[in-house]
Length: 139
Image 1 (cartoon, rainbow, N blue to C red):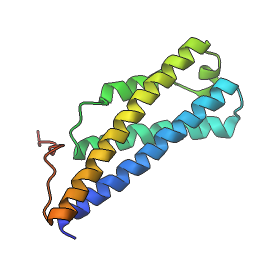
Image 2 (cartoon, helix red, strand yellow):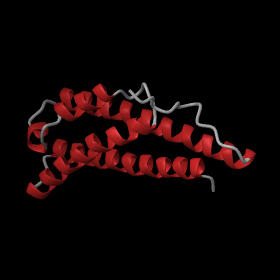
Image 3 (tube, rainbow, N blue to C red):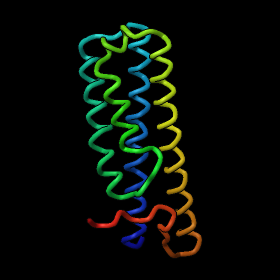
């Protein structure tokens, strides 16, 4: 496997792991809605938010994407300071948070799908193309 193919494979794995964090985030939203969480859940929710925010930087350093935006993700993380805060919100607010989560989640799934297509094309042709995403340019 070429160095570029290895980088692409690593990026796919990184994004798959990142999407798992987004699934966990949604799991905690459900716990908040049901008001069924404890101190450990609260701590794990905050850890999940940290991983989402930190890994976002690593992913954006490798892939140029316009959706979801960094601002979209930061806005969602800010809107959900804790499970206890979420559990006190009205149902309409929780639905808005879930809709925002879903929009971001689907965008990440789309990017993952594009990366997998690029990998498949590379395997089929024996070459490597990353043109769909464009590497981030150094400032």
